[in-house]
Length: 306
Image (cartoon, rainbow, N blue to C red; front, side, top):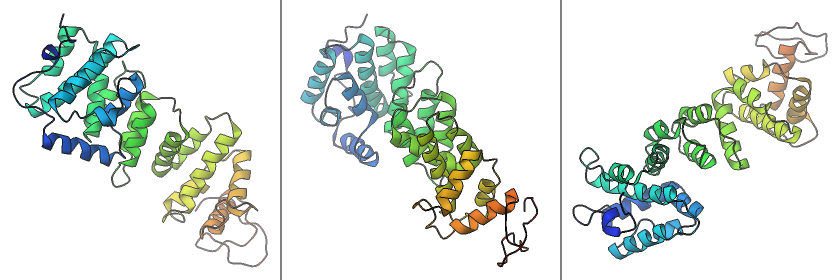
């Protein structure tokens, strides 16, 4: 079995090295892109090995020796966890040596007996840190993995989506079905759901037994619609056509027209309320050709859609 406690056995002493000036600059650029925190930083912090941002990337050979020493001597850290960190570092080596020719990370895993699921997780996190999200999800969605760092994965994927395409964070959530631990990650996920499918977002909000949490998500959904450019178009029509439960109907009216702040300040609030009245047949004003009231008193409109 590989004696990874020896630096020369864990890391190559010849050939290209990933932590030269250019490599360090690239890693720091990625870290800046991700609001100052990489997943390897989170791993190191979670294992109590080092303060990630200060130790990775190692800026000198001496710093790499120090990091290796910190990894192998870390107290209360399993053998597999320590090997996982070394595996991640060797992926950096493989990249600069051409991954098609260099298999240092794989060799470490095979010679040390690092389980396959640890390899899959660390390779997925390595791709996350390199802004290669599609490759990352090929690993992080693997059924053998626990939902490690799920909140952070969701948050990064949502915050760094492009062109309002939330397919990647939603693919991760649908596949892994993690239990999110932070309100921030939940709000980011729900925002992605609301922008992608209003109906799915509504049913997701109903999975929360706590009435306060559910109401907050419901109001977030309504707000995402009434404050969007399409509030009176397709998105607005989808929202007002949903089969609200009794308490949701109450929340909807209170949010858009009640005494509280809610969404009533939106320029579209009154129109969206009116659209809902038309759809549910509770409108009290004559309905014009465009689906909105023409003003004045009068009898109720007929129940129906558009």
